[in-house]
Image 1 (cartoon, rainbow, N blue to C red):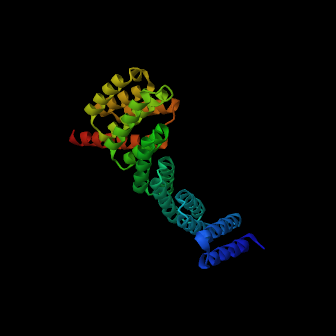
Image 2 (spheres, rainbow, N blue to C red):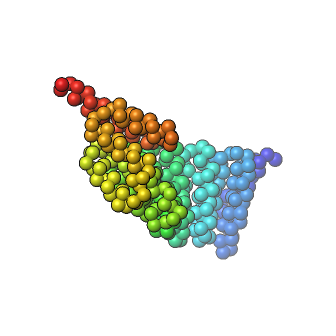
Image 3 (spheres, rainbow, N blue to C red):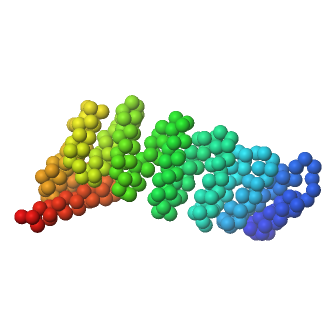
Length: 288
């Protein structure tokens, strides 16, 4: 018998058990065992839709047996099968799992799957929804003192917020992570990167006074920052904006990028800054 047919057979037996009559709910235990075996066979046959729906049935059995942890885990298994065929089905199952893990106080598990939901929305290019779930995951991780994971999720929120031109949200997050990282010897090395990201968001807002004030604050926050290439880049760009000098801006960015390649996020934001600067330069030319 092939694996899918075996799965179908086991699923039918499980359904029969549920529709039958038994003492003390043992029919749900028997059915759960059969659904579990059926789902495994569907998985091996790469019949993901059937595997997913069978894990959902397994979850219902565990709920009848008052085993919420097992029910939540079955929903996670269902989600991982649906991932192969339908992002929306996978998300729906993970949302159910998160609710169950919250009910039984497994907050770290809930956080982990909130992050997975955020990643699924991200893979579907649904930035707003992805942001929402990364934020929830960050809050859950923070509640459990899982700082590194909380920071990773917060950084995603900051990244997307800047893409959507919500620069102040990004600035607040990056500055917050930088402050937090200064208290931890293992995380200190990342501070200049967080401050650079916050600074680039300040530049996007186009307020030279604000960026100058921010650089002063960053020096107070971390006295070593003023000696970094990141600080120099921000200060030199601020000067180029103040002087409305597109050529200087381009040279400054090119020089930094030749030694420390800029990722696509920074490049995108710096291009926005450059476009604004170009527009300003053209305005000036038109006036003269």
